Length: 165
Image 1 (cartoon, rainbow, N blue to C red):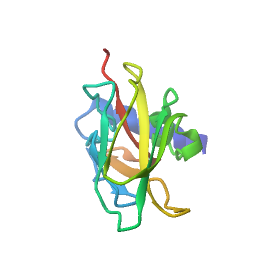
Image 2 (cartoon, rainbow, N blue to C red):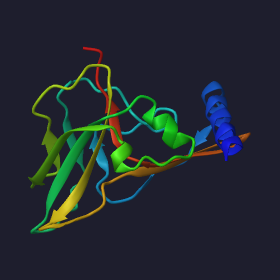
Image 3 (cartoon, rainbow, N blue to C red):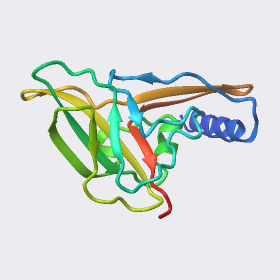
Image 4 (tube, rainbow, N blue to C red):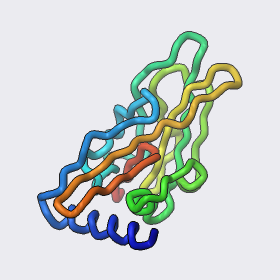
């Protein structure tokens, strides 16, 4: 198992160093896909730097009448995305320290009420609530192929990096 992880780490390094790495399209666990902040297109740059410390999170609106959204934001632990890339899925309890959790959102957006820390990686996700029943948190997966192999990141929450200030 350690050899497999080492091979994936080498693959990621190789992909970063060469133009021969191709990131395949993302797949999503649910249809609530992020609109803002957008996810990066490559396996090495999932999370983009945004231009505000108080973003308005937006996602594709798919709820039906009688449903609402829950939104949560976690301050990501250091190297969180790296762990997922080498084959350890990031479960919700590993997404970092939860700093926001809001239920009962009727629209497909949520503005953070307090500023976040600058130059910090955050995870966020959304789910649908129907009364007491809730769906799974929305996540995504993505693979990358290069001359030396395949790398795969999976069960990742949406994310972004705040500006330096």
